[in-house]
Image 1 (cartoon, rainbow, N blue to C red):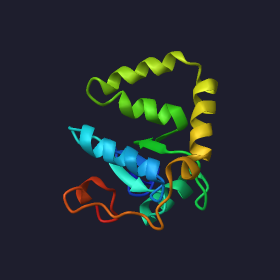
Image 2 (tube, one colour; image 1 turned 45 degrees about the vertical axis):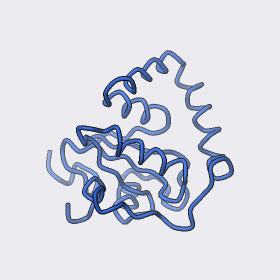
Image 3 (tube, rainbow, N blue to C red; image 1 turned 180 degrees about the horizontal axis):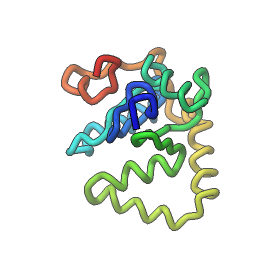
Image 4 (cartoon, helix red, strand yellow; image 1 turned 90 degrees about the vertical axis):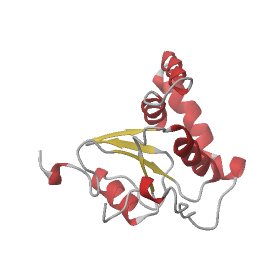
Length: 146
C-alpha cells in the first residue's frame, strides 16, 4: 500500500481519534486519553481542524455537523460505540474492562450512544471555539507537518 491508500495525514500504523473540538464532553474524552494513554498510542484531531476536515472528506463524512466521535486505525474507520470500545480495549486495566460492554448488542449500544451524542451540548455544554492543546500535549495532536 502507498500513502494514497490512507486518509490524509494518516500513516500506516497511526491511530487517530477525531473529536468535536467545541464539545465539553468530547474535550473531557480527550483529557481522559491524554491521561490514560500511557503508551501514547493515539493521535488526536478535532473535526474542525484542517487535518480533521481532510480525514472526514476522505471518508465521505459530513464536515459541517458531526454527531459521532470517529476513530481511524490505518485505513479503517470506526464510529460510535465501536470506536470507543476499540480505543478503551487498547488502554491498560481497568479501562480495558469496559470491553464487557460488547455483550450489549451493537444496535442498543449505538442507540444509547446517539442519545448522548445528539444532546451533548445541552447536557455538557459547548465552547465558543476549539481549545488549543497545551504545549506539553501538542505532539499528541495530528499536525499537517507530522
